[in-house]
Image (cartoon, rainbow, N blue to C red; front, side, top):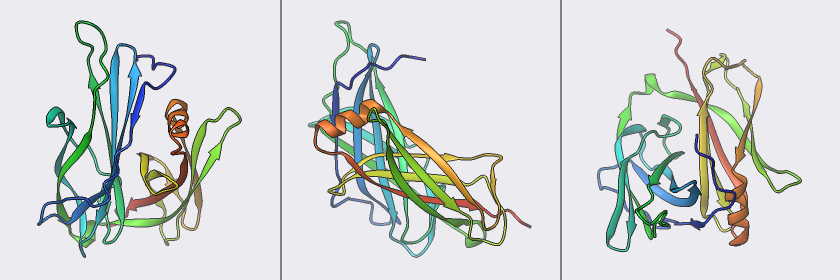
Length: 233
């Protein structure tokens, strides 16, 4: 595993205030960002997007790609690996997050000059009988003595059945509403009893936090969602 450099070299924040989507697409990318970090001789570009379901149907990811541009030059194009949560109910949000690695050139590492992050995602609708069930989710930000940041998610199962393998996803936002970061997890072999509550803690890389703070874009809010598949016959 490569050792990450002690400090960020650059962070690029991109906000899609008026996202463009395909006319027949049920989902819309409404906010996106990327962070550039150095890891040894490599540069890693972490890419995030908030997807809103603007249709009356439940949607999931069919396929998608994202591109990094430097002006008119295409720097990279990669597939979107997963939508978190897997199913998004009407009017709700989900997140995608992926990473692109830039290898060093002959003269060493070169910072990729990213000017734009573009998503092209296709969705498909889901029969309601296969839909996930929402869990109540609330998030709070916890700052440590050394500036480290943790997102604490309180997940409550308000249903009448036990919620196994819940999926938790969140976006991290600055005070002005710009998206900074996203993360998520599916807790395999973990269940929340009916009426019970689970705490989940997500640490955020301290280098990212320091860089956001230096740009006056400190994390101010975490928007979290959680759901589980009800697989009862």
